[in-house]
Amino acid sequence: MSLEKFEPYIGFNILRGSGKNKYKRYGYGERGLVMASVFSKVRRFYESVWSEAPWVRAAGFVGAASGGLFYLNQHLPSGIKVQATESSVAAILIAIVVTLYFFLVAVLFGDQVRLQKKLRALEQSFRYDKRGTLYNASEPNIAFRIATFKGILAGIGTEVGKEQLAAALVEAGRASAKDFAANLPNIFDRDIRSNKGGGIWSGLTFEQKLIEWSDYDSATGWGIFAARAVNGHLRVGVTHFRGLFSGDGGLFFGQYLAGYSETVLSEIVRHHKDGRFGDFRGVRLAEINSKNENSVEFEYELV
Image (cartoon, rainbow, N blue to C red; front, side, top):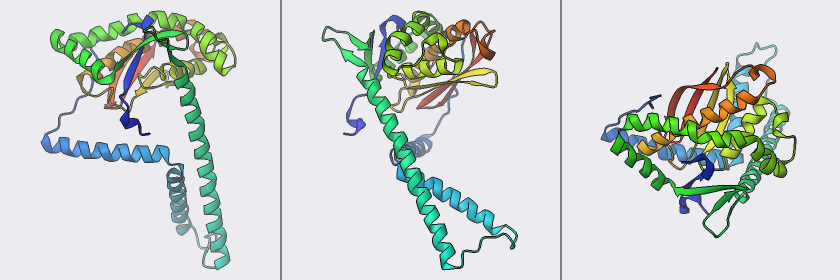
């Protein structure tokens, strides 16, 4: 059944609660809006085919590699250039290309199966106790329709002013993440490790902690988190393909996530004592970028 038939929701951990960095905004005329709509539909179709059809991706990879090798071969000196004029040589080359294609299909299909298993495991971590509480493992949560949630934020912005709300939401994100950030090691050891196995939180590398936090919050409906270290900075990207970051409500939620992620990262950095991140006290939000209606990205400086 297509996901389009379901209402998209966003979830919150109850204990988390619900700078004047600005998003880059671009204005479009009427013709521009039509072109943007067409481009968006084409892009969504391309993304769905590319991500859900391993044989298409494999064909793309093999085609690009074959074209590159053919171009390179055409510009080699005649003494070392491969001549495919003989039928036996051509047959061998075709067999290599076909074998490589099916090998890539198998690899990409295996990746897709592993991703689906991971998503099913994340779905099974949620349960409703029929007494008004939604749980993510042992943590109580709440959920909103995305349209309702963005409407709440946009309505508040209209009443109090957009810049004031944006700055307030960054601070709210910082404050509301304190309880979760402080309890993340316990949540990992109690809920996540019991399902996945492996070592305890304190034994993980810094990069592993970023991955585990990203995986956990990716299951809340906020989008897919990806946190990584880049050139002495920390960068967090959040991607959601159901319009969570579109419109004023989506932009405001991005401000909240920027502050929220700052607190979580600061707590991880502060208590990690090994390696190149062991001498810092935390992080400071440096930049918020709205990349498109599906994703936002935050840059943090180590302090």
